Amino acid sequence: MGKIALQLKATLENITNLRPVGEDFRWYLKAEDNENFKTIVEFECRGLEPVDFQPQAGFAAEGVESGTAFSDINLQEKDWTDYDEKAQESVGIYEVTHQFVKC
View 1 (cartoon, helix red, strand yellow):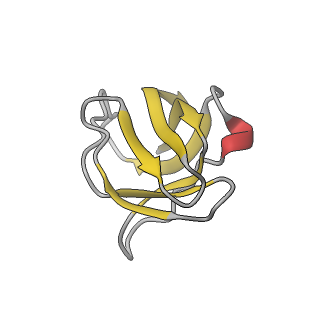
View 2 (cartoon, rainbow, N blue to C red; view 1 turned 30 degrees about the horizontal axis):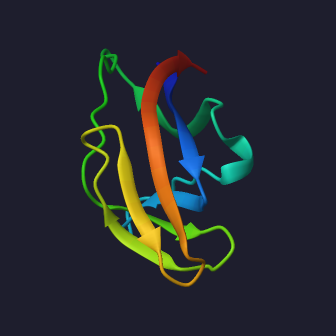
C-alpha cells in the first residue's frame, strides 16, 4: 500500500492561510509558498490511485496585512478575487493547479 500526496500551487495576491473550511480538513497554503507546489494532504491508497482533483467552494483565507477573514471562497474556476476593505487593496487567488506525487 502506498501513499499519494495531493499538492496545490497558486498565485496569492495579498492573501494568506488558504485552507478548506470544516472540521474534517486541515490543509494550509501560506503566501510565502506563493507559486510553489505544497503538499496539502496525503492519501493512503489500497488498490487505487487518484487521477484528478477539482477544488470546489468551501475554502477560507485571510488578508495579509489586515487579517480580514474571507470565507466561502470558491476555487472551482481556478481563480478568485475580492476586495479587502480594511487594507483597501484587492485580494485574489489565481492559477490554482495541482499534482499528485508518490510518498
